[in-house]
Length: 66
Image 1 (tube, rainbow, N blue to C red):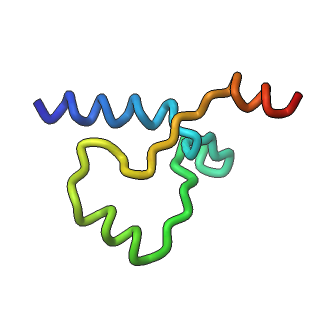
Image 2 (tube, helix red, strand yellow; image 1 turned 180 degrees about the vertical axis):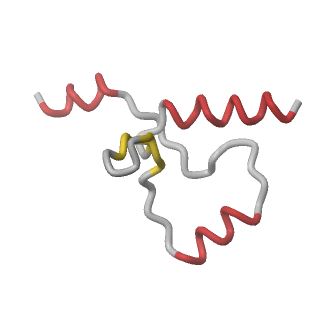
């Protein structure tokens, strides 16, 4: 059951606008800037999904540029 939650959360990260490739780490990372208090709150509470998740729609972004 816990594996399912992890898989769902990971899938959410794949489509999140804050999830991006970091060349220095050579991996995908979350680029959301949290202050110290927000990070502590986030790490202390078990979430079934990320409260900061925002869907990244590449097509929508392109439409705004035109």
